[in-house]
Length: 301
Image 1 (cartoon, helix red, strand yellow):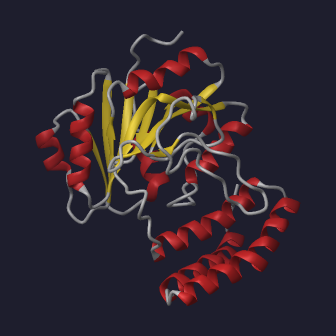
Image 2 (tube, rainbow, N blue to C red):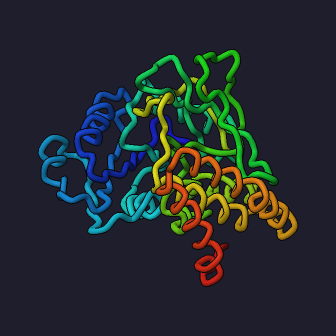
């Protein structure tokens, strides 16, 4: 039986963004939920933030990595120090709404075989606009899915709580025993698609993922921007192909590759050339090259 107020370990990653991380820690400190362990994993920032974090938040555990481990490995490192019955993974550029932890725990008391709960994610700069209210299944042809409610006005009646296909990497709470059973996040991705891959593994194991609209977290990104960068283009492309290879059967993956070759490559190449974004074009083809060369040398599953 679940404890009334179980220990929750909050894990967040800092990378050269201490100001934002400190603002998250202040948000956590103001929580009404008190049975918390807070862990900051510093992913090889240029300046070690340990002393400054400890000076302002003495109870926070700081784990310093000398290199940037990426999202998955950074969270896996933090998990080794987690003592809680639940582990709440949050981006450092988020802020907590009132009672978010109490509310995130509620579904675990009522739903069987529940592994992960993600809250409603709202754009901080546009606090009535949704970033995440659940997720659709991956399209086996395109390798894409849709985030429910993204860019739409917040509406609990329209975007109801319920089981969903994917948790949101910016905020997801998981039972620690589930993490021990299923294993950690797949570290091969480094950036993007890792929580989707992990969600697939959860559901293949017979467990459930839930979106709960009564719990809210604010994400400090602007839904009106989201400009492409070489880094984002590279990892989104590289990991999209790898995700499909890891999670779909041979026939489905072949159909996806045909779509990618005859539609995605011409479309993206033309778009980058028309906008004279040669840096994005290079990143795009480097990502394809990685899958042609490197992925054959490593274990994908």
